[in-house]
Amino acid sequence: MPDILILMATRNGERFLPDQLASIAAQSHRGWRLLISDDASTDRSRQIIGDFIRTRPEGQVALVPGPGRGATENFRSLLRQADLGGSHLAFSDQDDVWERDHLSRAVESLSRLSVPLAVYGCRMRICDESLKPIGLSAPAAAPLGFRNALVQNMLSGNTMVMTSAAAHLLQGAERRTGPVPVHDWWAYQMITGAGGAAVLDPAPGVLYRQHDSNVIGLDRGLRALSARVRGHLGGRSGTWARQNSAALGTCAALLTPENRRCLEAFTRALSAPLPQKIAGLRRSGIYHQSRRDRLAFWLLVALGRF
Image (tube, rainbow, N blue to C red):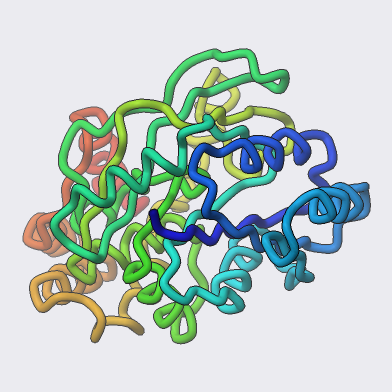
C-alpha cells in the first residue's frame, strides 16, 4: 500500500481541529504522513497540533508556519514544501471528519485506473456544526474531465487523494503558476489537462462540517443561494475563469495537445464580443454536469456576466 502525504492548512481551528486529527489517526490505511501549515493562529490550534505530534511516531507529523495570505496560498505553500518522494498526496481541511476508510478507499479506487496520473474525490456527508448529518453533496452526472474542469469544480479539496505522478505534476506546475481562486479547482484542471484521470466516488467518505467560519461552504438555504446569485451576477464566475485560464496558460506545455487547443479556444472566447464568445465557448467543448448548471452558465454568458 502506498505511503500518503496529507497536507493540512490551519488557522484558528481549535473548535474542530481535534476531531479531524483524531479521524486521521484512526484511518484504516496506516501508511500516512501529515504536514500542517498554520497561518498564524491566535487560538490554541498550534498547541493542539503540538500535543498531537507528541502522540505520534517521530517524524510522522510536522508543523510549519503558513504564508499568512489565506487558505489557497497556505495549501500552495504546503505543496511547495512537500517532500513527496513516491507518496500519494491528500488534502485535508481542519474542520471536517474523515470516515475510517477514506484513504484506503481512495487508494483502491486509484489503483483500478489505467493511468498513473490520477486524482480521486468522494461525495461528502454534509453535517451541521455538531456533525449531525443534513444531506449529501451532489454526485457526478457526467464524466469528469478537462472540458468540465474549465467551468466547474467537481472535486472538493477536502476529499482529494492523488497518485504520486499527479502530486509531482502539481508541485512542478505550482512554481510557475500565478494567482488561482482555489487550490482544488486548479488541481482538478491541471491533472485532467495533462491527460490524467479524475474520479468522484459516489459513496461519501468525509463529514463536511458547516459552520459560521467555513472558507467555502455549500450553497444551502435562501441566504446562501442569494449570496451565490449576487456573486455570479457580479461577474465572479468570469473573473475566476480568467484567473484559471491565465494560470493554466503558464503551464500549457504540461497539457496534452488536445487540451491546449481547448484552453486556447476557451481563453480567446473569454475576451470576445458576445456572438464570438458564444461561438468560441461552444467550439472549446466545455460541458456541465447537469442541465441546470448548463442553463445557468449560458444565462450568465448572455447577460455579459461571464
